[in-house]
Image 1 (cartoon, helix red, strand yellow):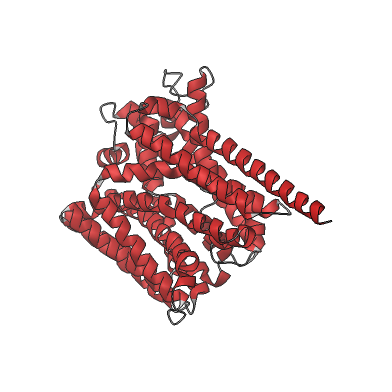
Image 2 (cartoon, helix red, strand yellow):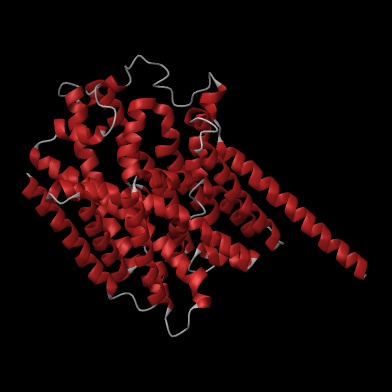
Length: 476
């Protein structure tokens, strides 16, 4: 089977390269590379939105979490992330598309100035850990299929993904995502059907019924309300999922790439609903693993695939895993690279180096840095993975920036600094042992970050506004 897996993966990457080569013909300038010339249709945009969010975490980690902790963790996956996309469509898609910019940091610069723009660029550090996790996951797949050591596999995969992202930018990413999301759905449906049919002794509906016959009430509770600590944990997960990724370059980059504002709105809302439906499949698989494989607590989806899929169907599963991961990685490479090029380097690099070339250089930088982080060990990755709550202060700033009539630089700067300090303190206190992981998980840090960001922004804005009024009064 190793030869079959290797052949399937080779075919997969060849197809991705062919799509990327075709997309390359559409890239003439930075706008084509970063936002696909603002020409994505509704169907392609929905596909790339779903594929971008459905990575290794959605497929494997969420199933493991459901297996071990119950349905309360669905607050993050799929409901929090699905709501994130829906809120982005309802509230942010139209005004952001009408900005006609290349990056989220461009919007921040227009509203709050260059210093606030710089802090928005800094917030892109959260991407490196996320990419590193995905690279480790796909590196392990290549290791299994080709027999290479994990480090060599990771470096090889990084080179492949970087290459086809460099070819066509957002066009490559969006079009390959459309192929990858089809493989993803096919693989999940096949695995879910086989597992639930086995659980139901040949009947799919009986298998579904069996999932909810689990006697542990706490396990089958969607929203825990009996104890405040458990509700706080649920709320923290939901807020991280629903709010932590709205003000992100990869999401806004897709909104900017839509052909029309109506397409941007419709694609975000529809993809959020589609995401919830698709991501419920790993949830069911996690519940099934609790019943059918009680001895397995980690890697439950691969364990289910090994037990319940035929050798031929296992190939589809391998392609499913690969598609889920690669669709996330290429988007994650392009997002921060676009911001670094457009908002950090463009005004500091001679004009003879085009923005298109600069962005491609930054794609390579992000890829190499993330691969180095992945090779350095999981502790460094876990360190940066905890930065999901970092997305909340930029969301507060962006919301005020879009809907507030008068804006000043100071509120955005102070709110950005606050977010970095709070996140840094929480992370250091956890790593230094000042509080245990259990205690840290019971604190709804995203809620504290949200309340604190809104309060600091509004207080700073009020003080600055009062100062301006006082100056005008004194001059009068």
